[in-house]
Amino acid sequence: MINFTKLQKHIQDYDSERENLIKKSRDVLKLTKQVIYAVHRDEMKEAAVLLKRMETEKKELDVIAGKNPRLECEGSYKVAVQEFVEAALYFSFVKEGKLIDLDVAPEHFVLGLADLPGELTRKAVFLAGKGKVAEVSKIKDEVDQMYGELLKFDFRDNETRRKVDAVKYELRKLEDLVLDLKLRRAPVSSETNPD
Image (cartoon, rainbow, N blue to C red; front, side, top):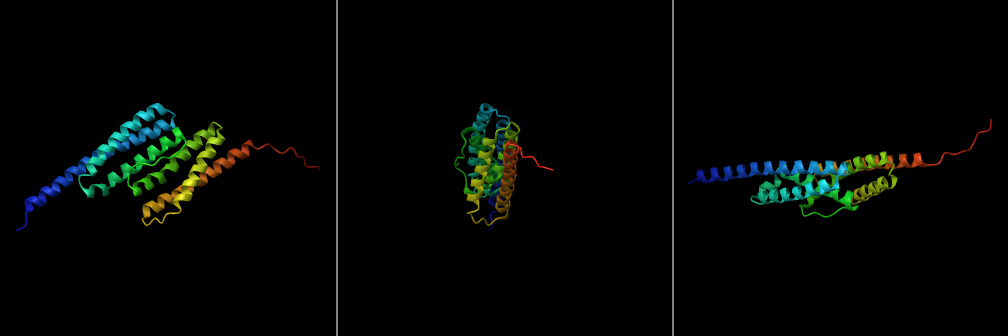
């Protein structure tokens, strides 16, 4: 005989854990936005404190997701982890000048990495406004290298391919920005045209 009580309990338990996962995902997402915003404002001490809180919330999220393999496939978990990756990488690049490896599923890491150039482009525009050409060029070079490495993959899912394509457009914006900055700094030719 079918044990409907057991089936019902299993589904209720999953729904309950899924709700916990969604709530904790929101906590992680809120902190990722705060970290990125603090880094944009060059408030690195505040960003470091927020990053620690974000890491703690992410660990709690992983515990919830670990209770059922299906939870790791939930959209809210996937988005929270990729945003976590983006915020952690952005903080690392601005503070240390390099990208770091993170202990997350490779698929989630690539999605977060592919989102990073958008934030780096915003930072480059801010730096360009302050005339920091070398720093803008460094960001452009990092995105160029990242894009070159991502092109070596054979991504099968549309979401990842779309995000990697977006990296190409961010790279073009950065190349245009660097070119514009260099042209503005180039000496004007003093040649005169004889009539």
